Image (cartoon, rainbow, N blue to C red; front, side, top):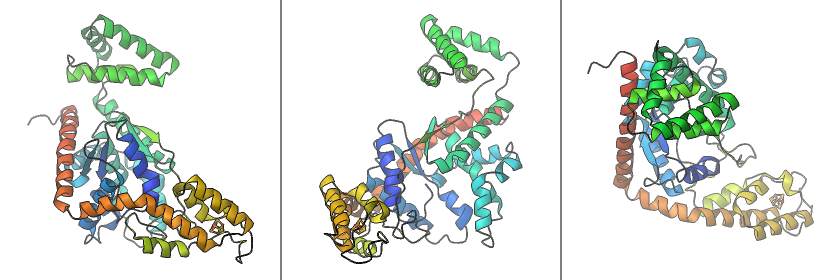
Length: 391
Ligand code: SF4
């Protein structure tokens, strides 16, 4: 996540809640990508440190836990930069120029000085962020799918360039022999199920099976990963998108909540701030007077009730709006209490972390150490594959 200031309810519902769930289901790496912030905001760096700190505090306060996941800052793991550099050698320029978000942002930001090398290359830096950890899945929204596809294409090109061997099939068969009779047979069955029926679950099981084989050399393991697809050694794994059920949170103007639109309620906003912000929020345009009945489905305030209020409160708002027995200010006041009820424990944790910046820094430092252990392994394979292993 790119550090751009304190996080808002859109981040909370759209991302952080799913991360809190995913950290118990997967081996998760969550990265504050400060280098990415520089790809667009290179001229405004005075607040970058504070933004990084705020982001870490908001993550921790929301329940992303260093005991369940790895939390770190991108620039603390220089391997991201080296992999980015090495991948830049093989990434055709046209691939970067056709990334949809690059074209869109460039058109939107004419005159903002985004015709830079760093901005053009940011999808490749993002690919390096993913490929460095040989990530199996990346939690994204639908708008990020082209970026995952881009990372997959880069990995495929890398593997094609550096993973092919003249006697690949013979070596792969020899490696299966080293798995032992039972595991070897299971591997063959899973490979057949994937190749003949496209069984994606069989592919995942086969990959997990290979990861457990401690008696295989790294080279044989890469060969057998590649043999599942049939083309060559897999040095960089192709990531899959993990599409989340990301709720679209309306902001104070009814549009998507975002910092740039200045329509956000922040996780650390006080009750008074939330109350004042909700007061400005548009309601059902048909409810001009207090006596006019309204329709919650036409009202962005109702969308927030659905996320924050309990059944009793939602029933009260629904009936009260349609019968005009409550006013919009009553409705917003009840919503404010519901939001506050959910945010109160998070805000208390945030206060604790704000008072212990050293603790936050040490969590990020430990995360970076763990991330580097993983990153070094991948980079060693990449260097070796690219003829740079003479250290
Ligand atoms: Fe919206 Fe509530 Fe007013 Fe109905 S009563 S229009 S749901 S703010």
